[in-house]
Structures are given as structure tokens and as C-alpha cells.
Amino acid sequence: MLAVTSYAPDHVAACHNRIAADLAAYEACAPSAALDPVFYGMMVMALDRWFVHRQRSLEGKDGNALNEVRVISDSIVGHGGMLVVDKGIKLTPETSVLGLEPGATILIGKEGFQRLSDAFLAEIEARYP
Image (cartoon, rainbow, N blue to C red; front, top):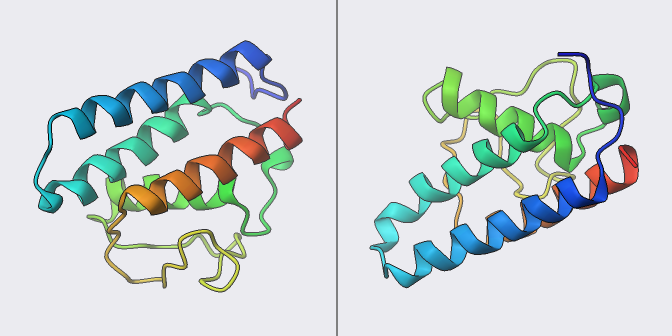
């Protein structure tokens, strides 16, 4: 598939709706808090997948929420959940949404996921109109 340079508003809205539905379903199950990092880590990977073919030149490398979701997804899949930042991306704890340090174990809770997904979707809407 060719790199995507824009997303239809209905695609972004469908992602917003799916996130809301998945979060509501998860919360309705009243899961143990110990399960949160697994669930929210998987939600980050799902979020990345909704926009997997986004053109990287539009995404940039400035440490934005798009970069953060990509790095977290790659780190969960390829590094056992330890945050590994690509040398070409300027993602720092001070400027990132979650404030994770390279080498840290990725543990995302509800509030962190909400902040990250909101920032990610705002960047999608701004950079891929």
C-alpha cells in the first residue's frame, strides 16, 4: 500500500468511536488494575494500526504524539515492552505525552492512554487533513 497523506474525517471519527466503545467495554468488566498496562498497551498498538500507513515525512521526527505512539508500539512488539527510541526521532520525556524515559518499562494507565490518544488524533487531524 502507498503511504497515506490524508485521512477522511469519517475514518478519524470511527477511530474515536471505537476507542470510546473499547474503553467502555473494558471498564464494564471491572478488571483488576494489574491488567491495565496490558490493555492500554494493546490499545496503543490498535491506535497505531488504524493509521499504520501514514506517510512518515508528514509525521515528522520532532517527538510528537504520532512518533510516541509509533515508538511505544514498536517497543511493545520488538523490545518486550521496554521503551526504545529510534535515533532519528527526537522523543524526550520532557516533551512527550507520557514522559517515559528510554529504557523504561512501558506501563500505561487509563489517564495516560486518554491523553496520548487525544494528542495522537489531534496530530492526525492537523498533519493528514
